Length: 75
Image 1 (tube, rainbow, N blue to C red):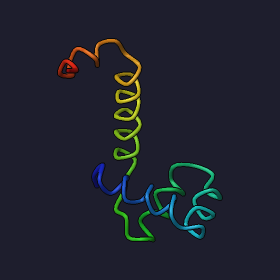
Image 2 (cartoon, rainbow, N blue to C red):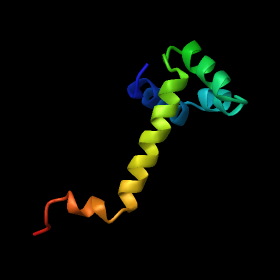
Image 3 (cartoon, rainbow, N blue to C red):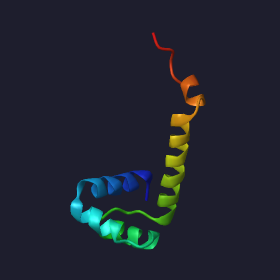
């Protein structure tokens, strides 16, 4: 139950046609979580929610002008 488990599951989806096909057939989060657990990735709804929030925050920082203030000046 961690972001790492979600990341590992997403990696498996990206790199395995069988897992990608199985994930594509999931109709909702419950089925996706059941698939992840069946494959040995211990993911729950809170993990999916947290990953979604973390991804949104990361995306916002990538396009925000604030992110540049946290980077060292270029030489």
